[in-house]
Image (spheres, rainbow, N blue to C red):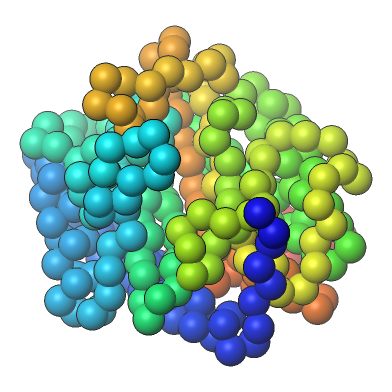
Length: 270
């Protein structure tokens, strides 16, 4: 399947979808606390997307080939859950970490982003994992520019995460996005520099590394969606949607309260 390149008008539409996605994640932040269930978070997100934003939650009833329809409007992955956790009635506990993954469709265009949240007082180890994963995502984003290659992104993420003592999940990757939820190219979070597809202005894709505190091996749970670490170690993920511009990149999933880039992004030679 070929990569679809986005026009300036397309990218403007994706900025809107991306901003709406980020605003849902902003809203959820104040509700992530002990005693709240991920089902409640899902309902808050669903109601905001549908009733306030007049948009569509992309995950709801999403059914790629071989999967049963996803039953909720967001993904909520707690502690050793790597991705695609289904919101349920289990109350969040003090010290949990949770990834909330939101994808909004507005006027036919997708915005896709996820963030980590620490419930109450998290451990030093849990907070460090979340921070290193955030930095790893940005190490990848910083490599996006015309003429670079997808392997440069994966290599930057992998070498940074592994240098911090963590492992990278390899079975899931970032992806092209636009009018479809998942398009070409696949964006691996590991690899060798100078390999894979060359980046060209107008390419839009997600960068969404999944970083494990223990080993990288994962398994799928019986619900057909939830992915967990085999060794039950903590896992974290951050995600942004980015576009390749004429001079570098633009992050499309931003709002007034999006966590700012780490200091090394604006540092000389970054």
